[in-house]
Length: 246
Image (cartoon, rainbow, N blue to C red; front, side, top):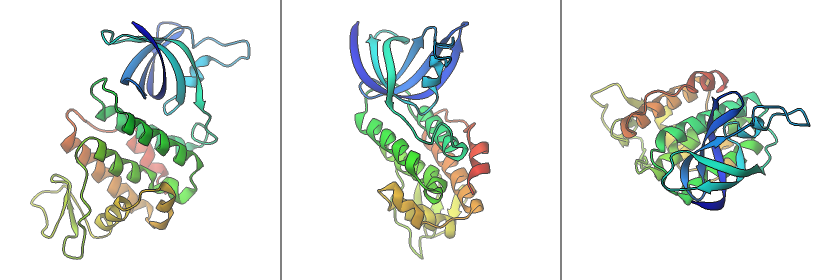
């Protein structure tokens, strides 16, 4: 067993016993990890339970007892690494962040370090925190499209007037209508192409989409992930996200 300092992004927390939590995090050094955190659901002298640190999307600095042979690790120290201004209090941004954490969590299967992915997610959350309304509305689409790159099933941007169907089973743009129901067409396909071109989140405000178009695209991307990620299932955060994607 070793003691290691690392950053971690909270994916989810589950109550354990009367006062503890089991917290699943994506860490900078060790990838996907679960931690038993004792006594954090009791009030501190300041009146606020330490459990508030372990909300989904929280970015924490950790000192952890780590063993490659343990499925459940322990923490010696933990504190905020980055203090959000809006994500944990703004209902729209929080819904987007919860969607991001659930999507990431469904893709992570093994405790393998992936620092490039960690920095992408960390950077995305910080951009979301400072985003305006237009950027926030398009952010779930941006995150889902670019996250796929790290898991080996990116969509190549080959959209054109001829290739105006996006086949979600094949993950490519096509000239002919697919022989199944899993595809996007015309405005939705063009919007995916536009977002694939974007590298900096603030540029998302240049992509003008209405609520229905965003909903259809995010539903299509859920299907796309289900075709590519084993045991993906459905996203529990999606109904709330659809309601706020205006």
